Length: 462
Image (cartoon, rainbow, N blue to C red):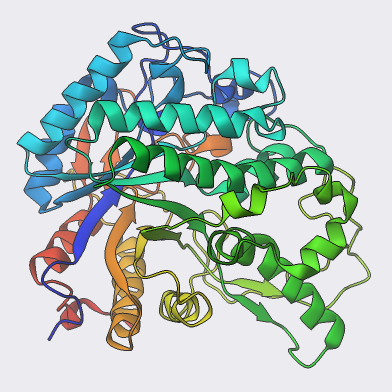
């Protein structure tokens, strides 16, 4: 018996900078990740995405492998600098031609696209003007996304404006561990608002070009588990964290207002960026919200060794301990909490009933296993991770969560941002020296899950 409907979308996901390579080909401009990766000390081994998985040349083979695994839905992203090298109105036709070929090949292999317009590779020329801390970037995104729909909206019907705005604003402009590497809380607050504004502007611009498309956004979200829920200080901190990551964008989209606890906390640091009429733009019809979920988060009481956050810190409020998260953990150090993928969609359905459709647009785990002496990649921990999370998701759907799709992260091992090539999330192993692809046991298990529409009780491990 399956909890997943006949029309449920089973897919896999990637992102342009993480897989394409070809960063200096066919007129592509420089992105903030090219610059960040070239800065000593920013990325493990100073690795970059100049080759990555060479998907720029190997996409047809990758789509054939997807098809062989039964994956019929693929979430990919466009590289903004490949299409508009300087982030202005000057097009690079060779870039547009590449995505024509890519999408046509995808469709020829029987794979339905879900497109992400912006997955972090901002043109460096826009960052030279302060990037997402500059209000104008929201308007440039709207122009860019309208051009995408004009070019590809006849073949791509589902569009996500932004991927994980919390990450590219707070990790990019707050503590600087991601591109562009800025450490300035005022810039992070501005960027967070401008990303919300950008989603509202882009959603309208895309629908103006083609009213038949569906638009959405992909948000990284988590459940906060408090070490002592009865402690009022800890409850207040948990509320700030929840607003900071979970509520900021969804409250803006559905209510036209940011969480009041953050409005009060940020004060003038936020107010000076919110112009008259902004929040009516931020509130926008959103057909689909993507959930990028990896683990729950654990918030503990302060400890003597805890240090206050610096001005360039991750949160603009006092730092507390992360609490004790249960083991085991993935290679990223993240706890494994499949029940969270049951609780989170139900929470969204309850707290934001305006959102009529959800999809899990990323879910996966980093583990290092490579081919053994027989050429097999035995990654039992990833099999267990995916299976248990999908089972939990199925129970949420049975209880009323409006989840219509699941996209495993990632289709193949790739460039994992500041971690370089040190962390492998793929269900397909990539030898980065030879570019040979090898489906892991997790790919085979996922193929079985797809084939049975999630009726996989024999695979579930306690």
